[in-house]
Image (cartoon, rainbow, N blue to C red; front, side, top):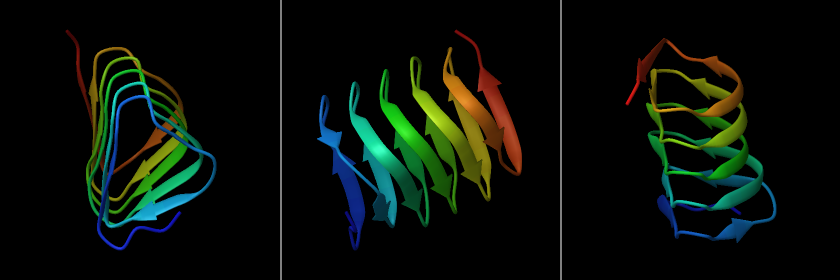
Length: 97
């Protein structure tokens, strides 16, 4: 799925494959079974499950997020406990509850 602007994926939604957008807000308990690629910022809400994330801007990961590799050209912000294979960014900031 290719979105020409911002993707706002609602809570509990599922996308079966690759997603590309300028920016993204992924709702809680949402699933993206393919890679997510955004040119700018991505916010991934509580308990969302994603294949992987590649972003040109900041990435925010909320508690309970499960994903493969997260790549960002800027900062990755982690709030609470998340499950990832690898975090690759200019900076990674972890905010524990």
